[in-house]
Structures are given as structure tokens and as C-alpha cells.
Amino acid sequence: MNIIFIAIYFVLFILISIFAFYLYRKEQTLRKREQEVFNNAQAIINKSNYKAQKLIETASTKARDILDRTKIFKNNIEDYASEAVFQSVEKYVEELERVSDDVVKSYEEMFDDLKNKYIEDERIAISKIETQAMKQIEEFGKKVAAQNESYAKTLEKLAKQEELAVTMIESKATKSIEEFQKSIDDKTSAYQKYLEDIIASEKLSIDQINEVSKQQIDDLNARIMQTITDYQSNLQAFIDNEKGAMTKIEETAIAGIADMNQKVTEKTLSLQQSLEQMIVDEFKKAQTEIQQYKEAERTKIEKTVGSVVNKMAAEILGKSLRQEEHEKLLIEALENAKSQGLFNI
Amino acid sequence: MNVEQLYKELFAEIHTVTESLDILHQIDNLIQSLFNTKMSFQEKLDMYLEFSIKNNLLMLLERSGIDIGDANAIENFLTQLKTRIREIPVFEFSVAYEPTSTTVKHVAEWIYFNLHQNVLIDIKVNPELIGGAIIGFNGKMGDFSLKKKIEERYLSTN
Image (cartoon, rainbow over all chains, first blue to last red; front, side, top):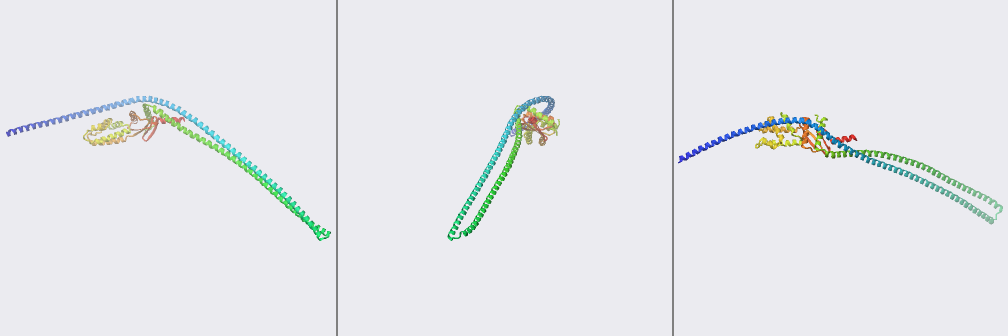
């Protein structure tokens, strides 16, 4: 029994071994086949790659050839197209020029208005200055005339006061003389009375009395006369002195008036000259300012117009140019850059 | 087609500075994925690079004798490629409007055919220019805008 089992196991082992060997051989065959397939595939791939490469090379050569040939055609088209673009642009530029001319004209008109207004304003200002200056001169003249008049009145007043003073002095002097005369007369009467009293009381002889009295009266009269003469002389000296003082005052006043007149004339002339100079300076200043203003306005206008033209060009052309036209302009830019040697090393 | 011509073809696909920055970023991502063994190089190219760049790059690798299974060699190659992209001269362009990709391509083609070299276009938009462009290249500047033309015309008439 055991032997039978052993035999069966042995047979099974042999069968399994044979099957395992079969499987091993089968795997080897499949591997070999797989390698062959892989190699074949690799060969096919390489071949197709080579073919593809060849095809690409041929296609590239052909494409290059076609490109070279079409380039001439393209250039012809571009020439025509660029001409068309240029004409289109030219039209816009003409329109822009027209618009910019209008803008410039309107700005110039505006500037002329401003300039005329400015000149008119300046004229009015200068006229005002002149009027004011004339008024000032007139006022100054009036003031001087008023001062002169006032001075003359003062002088007249002074002269009247002096005349009054002289009259008063003369009156006082006359009065004093009269009073003095009266006092002498009184004294003489009193003295005569005194003498008569003495005569009466002392009973002196008339001859003696007469002799004495006569001598004394003569002495007295002589002294009185001397006193009167001295007084009159002093009074005349006083009057002469006063008259001299008055003459001096008059002379000083006349000299003062003449000096003042001269000063006033000089001052008036000086004021007139300075006013004339001021007007000339003001006019020159105004002219310079007008020139500067004109230049500034011109620069401003040019900048504004340039900016307006650019903005309008950007808006009109930027929007109206088609993609193809933009591309043509790019190619033209490249052509220009090349012709100007930008790409030269 | 030799290697230099292939480089030119590759760079001709990159028109602007913005595009160049984008490509550099794509190459950086590709470099980072080189040592990832779960994906094949082809899959990585498909994932990270644009179609036009990818094909040119494959041809360049092949013509340069780089083994696409050698990650280190590809990394060195891509690093050099990045340096060469950064060295492409810049063509400054101020324009009045935002150009379409077609316009950019036309401009790039014009430059390529006339200057016979690869350049990167750096575009700035300034609507005041109205049309045309201000161009800067190799330290030189030129104003070829419509604004300038109009200003010149205006000044000449005043």
C-alpha cells in the first residue's frame, strides 16, 4: 500500500516537474517573443522617426522655399497695403492739420482779444495816472497859490498892524507932546502964580522981579525947548527905526516869497519830470509785460495745441486703425529702423 | 541640417521674452523629472514640453549624440540649452496696442529673415504712440511711431 502511495507521489512529482519545465520553456518563448516584438516596434519607431524627420526636413525646405517666394508677393502686397495705410493716415493727418489750424486760429483770435484788452487796460491805467498826476499838479499849484495868497494876506495884515502901530505911536507921541506941553503950560502958570505970590508976599521990586523972572523964564523956556527938541528928536529916531524895521520886514517877506516861488517852481518842475519819467517807465514796463505775456501765451497755445493734436490723433487714429494696419505700421517701423542702421552692430 | 541650424530652428519657436521664461520653466521641470524611473523620457517630454519645442529638442539630442537613456547627459545638455536661451539678444518693442500672437510671429519672422539671428521680443504697450513702434536693439533706440511723425509734421508747419 505504502509503495503504491509512494509511486503515485513520485508520478505526480514527475508530472508537476514536467509541467513546471513546460511553463518555464513557455515563459522563455514568450520573453523571446516579447523582445522580438519590442525590437520590431523599436525598429518601426526608429524608421518612422527617420521618415518623419525626413518629412519634416523636406516640409521645412519646401515651406522655406514657399516662404521665400511668398515674401516677394507679400512685399508687393505690403507696398500696396502700406500705401493704402499711408493714404488713410494722410487723410487723418490732413483732417488733424485742419482741426489744429482751426484750434490755432481760435487761440490766436482769443490771444488777440486778450492782447487788445490788455493794451486797452494799460492805456486806461496810463491815462488814469496822467489824470491823477495832472490833478496832483493842479492841486499842488492851488495849494501853493493858496499859500501865497495866505502869505500875502498875512503880509498885508502885518503891514496894516504896522501902520496901526505907527499911527498909534504917532498918536501916543502927539498925545504925550500935548500932555507934556500942557504940563509945561501948567507948570509955567503955576510958576507965574508962584512968582506973583512971591511978588505979592515979598513985595520985591518989579524990576528985580522982572529981571529975575525974565532970566529964570528964559532958562526955563530954554530947558523946555531943549527937552521938547530932544523928545521930538528921540521920537523921530524911534519912528525912523520902526520904519527901517518895517522895510526890513517887507524886504525879507518879498525875498521869502521870491525864494518860495522859485522853490515851488523847481519842485513843480521836478514833480513834473518825475511824473513824466514814471509814465515812461510805466509804459516801458507795460510793453515788456505785454511782450512777456505774448510769449507766455504763445508757448501755452503751442503746448496746448500740440497736446490737443496728439490727443486727437491718438483718439482718432488709435481707434480707427485696424489690426492689419497696425501690423503694417510695425513692419514699416522695422523697415525704417533697418534702413536707418539701427540693427548695424 | 547641422546642430547649429537645429538650435536656430528651436530658438525660432521662441518669440518673446515671456515665452522664453515659460520654456525655461518647462525645461527646469523636465530636468527635475529626469531621474524619475517610473516614466519614460518620451512620456516626460510629452508631459513637460510644448509640441514644437519637444520635436526640435529630440532632433537636437539625436544630432548631438546624446543617449536618451542617459539622464546625466540629458541634464548637462538641457542646462547648456538654458544658458543659450538666456543669451538670446532681446529686441525691445514699444507698440500702441496689444499685438496678437500672429502679429508677434510675423514680426519675429521679419527679424529672423532680415537680421539672420534669433532674438527675443520684449513687448511693451503704450497707446500714446498711436501706431508704429519704438524699437530698441543692441543699446540703440529709434522712435518710428505715428505720434513722432505727427509731432514732426506739426512742428514743421509751426
